[in-house]
Figure 1 (cartoon, rainbow, N blue to C red):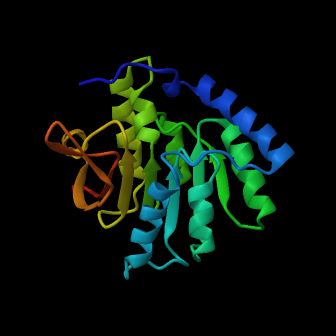
Figure 2 (tube, helix red, strand yellow):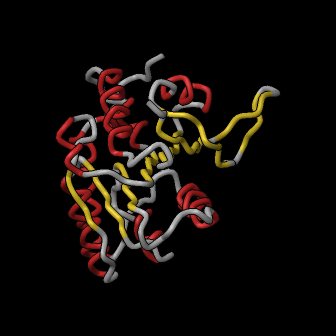
Length: 217
């Protein structure tokens, strides 16, 4: 199954959007939208804080498609120290760097396209986070299947080892669809509960959040 292509899957859309958000931030101090809302972000932060085996000082965290960087700012405020955010939009990185600087937070930001092999130069991480980036890749009007496969291959190689975590939140794909698409590279560790709704006698989720581990060779 493929999603219908959308401007949300294009770099041009995000460059225009973040150029507007940079202007709003400089003029009004508005950091911009938190993708999927703040609750989705906070659920992931809360889950990470409950994991006793995660050392906040040493865990290397990578946020894919970091946008304005608010997820990493939330982690920094909780004591996480080794934080990196990447986005293929230079405007997003400019905004994120400005917000972090104004809050005196030490967060590393880089421009990177996760569908391209050169992003492997980022190194390896014990925690990789995706909130909506796989969705955006899936909405690319130009060969989304190949781009999704390249993206997942890159994520797998960026994970430090088979105990490292890949945490993804999606509003376009169900848990079953993600499990099917990821099964060649990742194994499910757990599902992070998200709000449900009822329609036509069936129960569904507004968003899906799953924690994966890298599949052992």
